Amino acid sequence: MRIVADENMPLVRDYFESWGELVTLPGRSIRREDLMDTDILLIRSITQVDQDLLSGTGIRFVGSATIGTDHLDIDELPNSSGIQWTAAPGCNAVSVAEYVVCCIAALNRKGILTGKPVRAGVIGVGNVGRRVAERLNLLGFEVFLNDPPRSENEPDFDSIPLKEMKEMDLICLHTPLTRKGPYRSFHLIDDDFLKQQKTGTVLLSAGRGDVIDFSALNQWKSKFRLNLDVWEPEPKVNTGILEDALIATPHVAGYAIQAKWRGTRMLYEKAAGIFDKPLCEKIQPLPRPELDFQGRQVDWREVVLSVYNPEDDTRIMKESILESTDDIGKVFDALRKNYRTRHEFDYPVIRNAKLNQVDLNILNSLGLNIQ
Image (cartoon, rainbow, N blue to C red):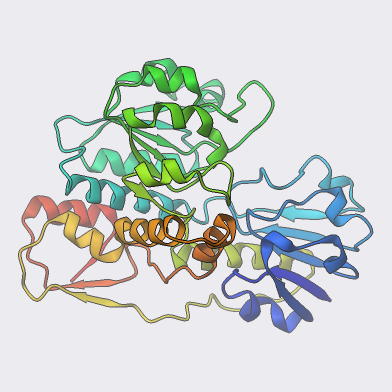
């Protein structure tokens, strides 16, 4: 068996190397010629998979370690010589939701989103958006949801119209990217939507970059406090918007190492079923880090930011792109490829943090391992 995989997929050798020849390549540059006589293709969101890529290759299974499928030509895949495919829905949902919490903690320290009540709109309430909404509720936000497809299929789901989002203090975008159909999300956030928002709204986008019309955003950016993890187009980042963003990260909201492990494992389990392979035990190769506050009085924000602080990634991204003469796309991809190890909340052990009861309750509800 021959397997081609994105070189940035963690644990791929641990799970797949015993199956045969494993070749790892940069995901953005995988070509048809690389896939000749290949049985399995394992990718992430930056690899576009269609008939042009797969035709004549012998691929029998495509696995994408991502929650989205807009990079897969799903309509064509089942007709391509019986090719089976899977994504990894929900694999990084916790990571993205915790990214949002950490962004709120960082913004709070700047005096943003600290009023009562904070009105938050969540657009797209699937695996990720649902978890984001749950955590916003835990933080005491007044949460409003927009997801017309869910509303249509679930009579008890309360979805407000998009036009009623104009009085929000925070708007979180977590809709998948769809380019056709009645619920097209491509450029859902357009000139008309942006101009109606109140000044000072935090616009937090951690789903798909093309959900926002960045040309329109460039015109209205001064109205917003921008918190952007995804961009249009990637990897070519608009440097003017990057410079103005309060928090800017290189499409890494879902990059907690546990989310990556989970995504690879999901593909492995699916492929093992298809190719009748025995399953090995789950692999967790890193010890749990310990974060010791040495008895200091801290609040919930300081604790979650000790696990992950998006301002660190913001500084690195701005310095790397705005101060470099290299190709922006190559710098952006390098930031993702060389991304540091980041953990989900429940993995590190938090020791000796002196907390009031309210903050302790918040941290326990968020799933942190407080000892």
